[in-house]
Image (cartoon, rainbow, N blue to C red; front, top):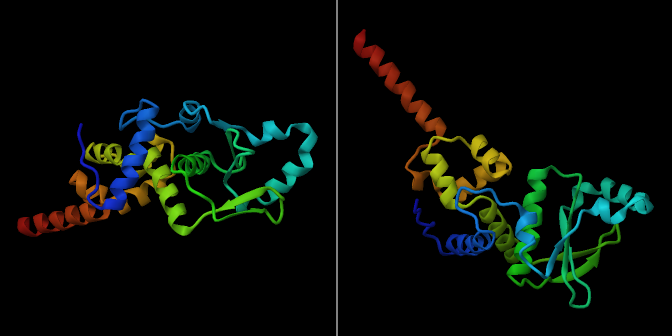
Length: 213
């Protein structure tokens, strides 16, 4: 089913970049994107589980990273022009990790240049920093790749609620809410906010009872 993208230029840009990633993975608008499967299509990007990389010989370092879990989500490293290596925080929820990994993929695909590369104060690992505009773009593309606008609209038209959409695409309810609100997906789907629909039903019921009385 064809669904026109949002009218705003920036949102259309995000959808276009995300659509290219989903096409690369041969996904339809209702298919769930698996970051690992997408990354496997890029010869210059590798995905590595941090706990597997560290092994038993670096338990102390893993303990430090676990203690600082709230301060990092994922990172992408590249040495001397070699392949990119993406790893993620294994102590975060899977729904959060999926977004974090895709955000790193987006930075790479969009060829963003970091403002600086500094060591993390607690872990010593190199951390790239980005300008706010680059962060916004990468997060927007990552979110749109995981939650395509066309897919959201189709599921809303079917009557699915946000929790069901989140389960369908393997993301958090918060991300679904954000995508619906920023893209005006309910308007595109021709459906009302659940609270508005419920209020209309209540008013209609009251009027019906009044008429009968």
